[in-house]
Length: 126
Picture 1: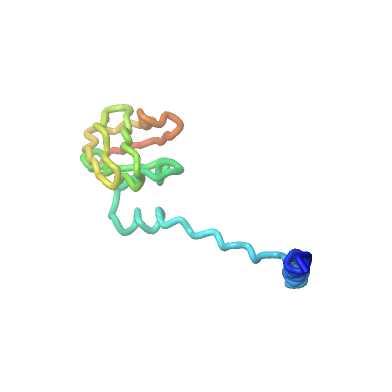
Picture 2: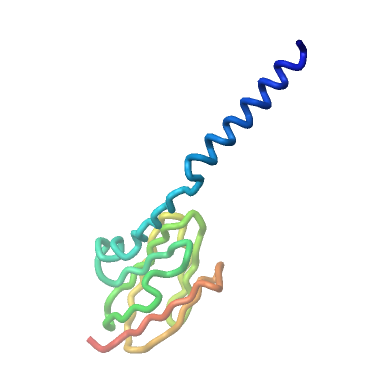
């Protein structure tokens, strides 16, 4: 009876397939997590720009002349926002970098290391 172990295995496999098919087969969609970046900005205080894997949050920021702007790197990569009056050195993963704006102007910036990441800072008179 050498055929029995093979026949038994085939019968077991067929039975498992039938049971799986009878269970409906459709998985419930996994809820998309709400990004924490919007919450984090509010908790960190004013004039904070988060660096995330999907870009800068917020992409546009308005501040007053004399204010400081802080970039917070939430990724595992070094980032380097550059543009207008700012030229940040590399911001290490989970690190921060701040600079002070001195005059009313508007300027675009880009991540020197990831040029697809772009943003804009508008500086208004106090």
